[in-house]
Amino acid sequence: MQKGHKAGGRLPAGKQMLSETKLPLGGQMSLESGQEAGQLRKNQEFTLAIEDLNEDGAGVGRLDGYIWFVKDAVIGDVVRARAMKMKKNYGFARLMEVLTPSPDRTEPPCPAARPCGGCQLQAMRYEAQLRFKERKIINNLVRIGGFKEEELPMLPIIGMEHPWRYRNKAQFPFGRDKDGNIIAGFYAGRSHRIVPCEDCLLGVEENRRVLEIIKDFMNRYQISTYDEESHTGLVRHALIRKGFKTGQLMVCLIINGRSLPHSDVLAKRLRDVEGMTSISLSINQERTNVIMGKEIVNLWGPGYIEDFIGGVRYQISPLSFYQVNPVQTEKLYGEALAYAGLTGDEIVWDLYCGIGTISLFLAQKARKVYGVEIVPQAIEDARRNASINGIENAEFFVGKAEEVLPREFARTGERADVIVVDPPRKGCDSVCLETILKMEPKRVVYVSCDSATLARDLRVLRDGGYEVTKVRGVDQFAQGIHCEVCVKLERSRNKIF
Ligand code: SAH
Image 1 (tube, rainbow, N blue to C red):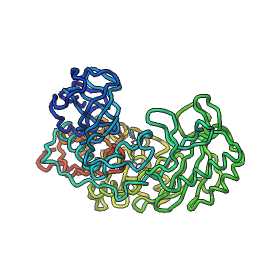
Image 2 (image 1 turned 90 degrees about the vertical axis):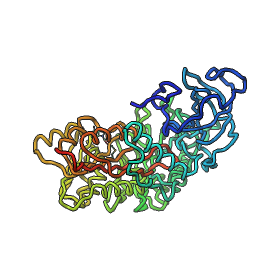
Image 3 (image 1 turned 45 degrees about the horizontal axis):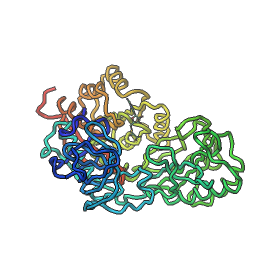
Image 4 (image 1 turned 180 degrees about the horizontal axis):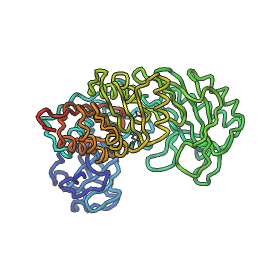
C-alpha cells in the first residue's frame, strides 16, 4: 500500500518513513573510512543527520542513498552511529553519541527510557511530538488519500495537558535480579528480560506503593516468582488499574497456580492504599505470553472498579477492556459527538463499538444507536454499561461490521443518519465501506488509530460522494508514536444519489 522511499527502494513493512520529510541529497555526509555508501562494515562508525522517524519511532537518516535506522535518535539530531545490521537498501545502526542535538531534543525523564522502549518519543519535547504526529497525519492523507494539503480541513491537534501519568492501567511482570532479589518492571524492547522499573512515568503514582507491598509480602512468605523458561514459580504479573474520576484502585495478581498462600494478608495490606476497591487473583497456568488467565478469584471487594467517561458510568473488571487514557478518550469521543451533529432524532450506527463507549456517548443525543463489535465479551460489557446507565435506545450486535451492517440493512431497509466507525489499525473492510455508501448517511464520523489506513478508506468514501469537512488529531499516547484522528465526512450536496 505504501510506497518505499524513492531513493531507498522498497522498504519492508514497518520501516516506511512516517512524515516523509525531504531527506538531504546523497553525498552531503562523508564516510569516515572513505568507503562507498551502503558498504560500511559491521561495527563501523559514521556520522548521520536524522531527518525522519519510522513507524517504530527510530530515527531515519540517509547516507548517499542508503537508509539507516537509528533507535533513540530524534529528528534534527546529528549523531555518531555504529553499523549493526545491513540489508540491500537499508541498515540498522546503534546510537553512540549525539554530536549536535536537535532543538527538539530533551533529556528523557525516565531512567528506563532506552532499555524499556515503550516510549519511543521520550527524547523529543512534547510540542515537537505533537507537530510530528500532525505532520504524519497530513502526509498520509496527501500521499495515500490523494488529498491536497491546502484543501485539508485540519483543526489543530488536541494534545494532553499533562503528558505524563496518563495511563490508568499497568501490568508489571515479576522476576529476580542476578542476586535473587524480587524485581518488577517491564520487558526490555523485543525481549523477555525484565528491566526493573516500578514507577513508569506514564502510570499512576500508586503503582509503586502497590508493588512494594506485593514484594514485601512475597519476601516475607517466600513466595516464588514465575520463570518463563522453566514454567515454574508462582507470581507472574500484577495488573493495576485506577478509575481517574472515582479514584478507585484495582489490583489483580496473575499466578501460575490455583491459589496464593496467605492471600488474606496481602489483601489486608493492599487495603491500606488509598482508593483500594478491588483485589483479585487471575489463574494463568498456561505456558503462554498472554498475561491474563481466564479465571478470576475475587479476594476482596465487588470484583470491579468504576469510572466515568463523559458522564457515562463504567464497571471495569480485571478482564474488561477499557480505554487506557480516559481523559483524552473523552476529548476524542467528544469531538466525534460534535461531528455527528445529533439533534435527538437520528438513527446512528457505531461500527467497531468495543464496550460501547462511543455508542453510549451518542445515545444520549440520538433517537437510536446500533453498535457492532466482533468480540462477544465486549458486547456483554456494552449491554451492561447501557443498563447501569439506564440507556434504553442502544442496541448491540455481535459480529463483523462488514457482515452485520449489510445484513441488517437488507433486512430492514432502514437508512442511517450518521455512521461512526472506530476500526482497529487495519481500517475498515471494503464491504463495510460499500455498505456505508449504500446506506447514504448524511454524515460519517471516522475515528482512526492509524492515519495510513484512514487515508486509504477516506479515498473510498470521497469517491463514493462524501466530502471530508473536518480532520483533527487527538493525542492519546504522549511519549509514544501513535496518534488518534477524528474525521467528519458529509454527503456532498452536488452529488446525485
Ligand atoms: N470505540 C470502541 C473501541 C474501538 S477499538 C470502544 O469504545 O470500546 C476497535 C474495535 O473493533 C475492537 O473492539 C475490536 O475488537 C473490534 N473489531 C475488530 N475487527 C472488527 C470487525 N471486523 N467488525 C467489528 N468489530 C471489529
